[in-house]
Length: 345
Image (tube, rainbow, N blue to C red; front, side):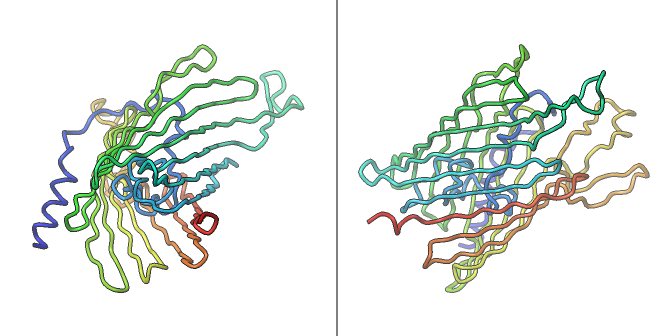
């Protein structure tokens, strides 16, 4: 039976593989919508579509929110290079009367004040400006059967640079299916679907993602559990990606996580690209990278790991993740979650 369990998981995960496409880097805007909003999920390589069992499901798969039985709130802070800050705030509340879950969330990426310069005044005009992106949305998830649920997230979008701005909307639609067999779950979601936005008479599409994933509780004992997850991601502005992740939980209090994002065994270098225009240097998450001498080496781009600590009595979760960004180094993420059950009776 264990062999059948693993075979079923592999089939579900590999089902959507239909060949790799071409990169279209730079063809979509509002890239902040791609930023992972949960330290727990990022620690697992963002292979979270078929896990989606906390408040961050509002982003990763709104269909998974049906797993929540109590109100939850979540807050994430990311400190990016170049003095960029990213915050995510969200809250969800189950609705037993409708057998659903509702939620609200706010996402913002913003810069510190930057000095305005012009060709005539390269050292500054004495004025400053900022840049920011904003998404605010409502989420609803509905249980359709005892194993299947559907969720939708509708978002208002705004992008601002100095005194210019653009506004638009997008929607996420996700489904979650609990097979009821061997703790295998299946999830599917379309993210950031919406009309083109227009910034200063320059229209651009949104970064639409299609994700299909599966998760399995591979091993469960009285004091510890091992969760494995994988998913296939098809973006409209890059090549296909595989996300792989694992979470080891001990005593339902401590967790360690590891993840890897993959879209190529070998990333073509710019040198290769100049010699052969059929090659693609834009693969973001390789396993191996070839240097100018032709040698292969493992890279940290796309690798992530993290840890979590839960205080059940207080209803508090604290999660941390580090994700490698290649030549930019790594980025630290912190997420705090709070179970609001104490406020509702």
